Image (tube, rainbow, N blue to C red; front, side):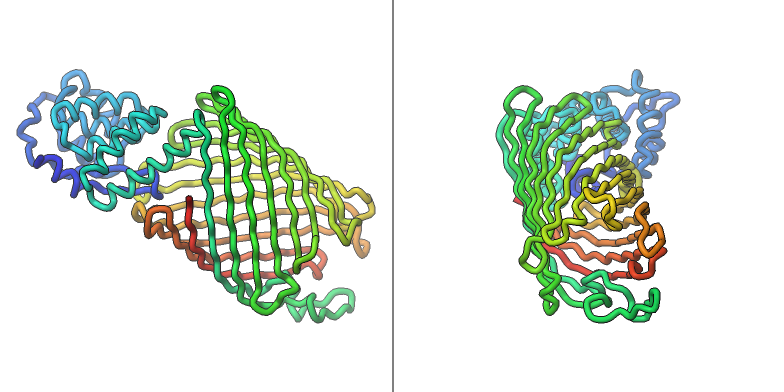
Amino acid sequence: MILMMIRFYALLFAGWLLIPHSAYAEPAQTSKTPATAGFNIKILQSLFESMKRGQAYAYARHHLPEMEGDPYFDYFYGVSAIDSGHASEGVFALERVLVSFPDDQVARLELARGYFILQEYAEAKSAFETVLATNPPKRVKDTAEAYIDRIRTSESRYRPTHSGFLEFTIGSDDNVNAGVDESTEFLSFSFTGNSLAQDDNFTNLLGSWSYSHPFSPGWLFETTLTGNFRKNLDLDLFDTSTLTLQTGITHLQASSKYKTGIIAQQFNLDGDDYRSLAGIHFDWQYTLSEQSSLNTSLQYAQLDYTNTPLRNSDLITLGINYVKSFSVYLQPVFFVTTTLGTESAEDNTSVNAERDIYSLRSGLVLSFTNTLALQTAIGTQNSQYPVPQFAIEREDDYNTANIGLLWAFARKWRLSTQFNYSKNDSNLDLYDYERNVFEMTLNHTF
């Protein structure tokens, strides 16, 4: 019981809701650890508490034959093994800890995390529920509940499931219509009215619902319906609404997830039909390790504009995304996405619907606690238009940067504040604009 209490209050969790790692205080009963030549428990503990989990695992692994079975050693070794990509070894070590200390809920929590990584969801859920039954500290409770939510999602492999979220946003936008600055001049044209940048406050409502139904081992039918509605306070002309339906088949393997499906979307401007989209996509997600993944997506879409059919086009895009998390201080998660695309106009004389697209976006998430995180990202997109306009082949560089603070203040509730900056530079000045958007969003998942 003493060991359990010490661990409860020495445990430090880091990671955005779902990736906690413990920092174990110096045991009060170190006299139980045998004085083995060549091994020093304080060295292992120091590496562990410094979040050098890979080094801690290597050090412990070297002394495993002589130290295996000591509960203090097994705890440090087990958690370090899980955090450095050796979940099976970590699970066995933590199971030994619980043989000596069956009431140690911190070790049980780490064991449950190991089960989850190994996709042994029944064992993981049982262990997390056992921890919750002891009325643990709030951080431990939040972590266990977050993992149980993840397990429910993973259960879609063998039973029908559904989930969704609602978001409400209020914000301020200094260029609602992506208009040019009033000082812009182009071929002696003067810009007035809706061509100039206009600022306004806005509200936005976003909702999504997903349903998954397995029909064979490893095969799922999935569908998602999403609605996004933005209302400007004064500039009704630029109110937008978007409805998107995606449906398809997913195939799950040990390290890969394959998905193919169709997508249909309707975009309205000021309550009127503006553009429709219909397409097909192929996705592949590959788990490189327990801390990194690679995602690729190929999509073909047909875009039809209700009132400007000259802009109708076919769009093909290939996207590659890499995500890597690190078991160090602040539990950083790095991501980078690159996209290649080509848009072909149905009317090959269209100046704005024929283009090649190249984009790159990267970002970083830092977790201060298991409920508070900072997210930053920057991106750039180059678009080249081969059909001359005003005797010029247009080329645009669209650059973005954003920073946001996310706070999960209650289970299934999140509040975020975000600032978004964007700037479009074109060799045709009439397409130059700059935009700053500040927004606060309340999110609820169900």
